[in-house]
Length: 267
Ligand SMILES: [Fe+2]
Image (tube, rainbow, N blue to C red; front, side, top):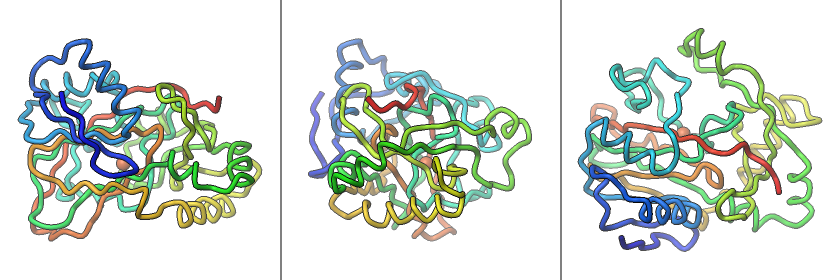
């Protein structure tokens, strides 16, 4: 296994791993540590069946149910399809996935099957670097705040998903990484009903203002997809977004798996 950093702030390419084959215990441990350190891992030229992909994803944690079950693969409901032709809009706002769970996913894993000829990248920002760059008084303030997270307002969310995943879950706005031990800023604007002590409107203004100040080009790794890429994103210390800047007559198909993690805590 060879690990090559892709960007000064985050991201690394992993060479010498065929994810269609079983990954042994030492390699699993090395990959888990690499994710905690580099926050985004890229594997090129993979060729995976849904079963193989689920096995590979489990290196990073147990696959979890996704709450937009209308987009899950029929025979493999732990794999979600990201595909604009089934009515989805690219998720272009910065976010981290499924913050409405008590134990949100440690990682989101994307496998690129159909890639447009231009555009359609996925960007990942280091919220560890964002935290470090904040002035001391602002870090202390964020450490004192929590968010209350529910489902965001997708009109096509199924009633059963709303019933299971719609209640509010509280998380700290700064969380400690369970493997790396570092701190990162942690919130999801559209899943946050409110920040502790703020109205919903003030909460949105506050979080959007934070994003404007924190997300700078130097903390972003932009992944330009090639067919067969697997991108593993560490949700505990990053935010990500899709780029909708591609020709919608072309196809962009990614398979998504989210894997279980710890309950966010500030230590
Ligand atoms: Fe996402």
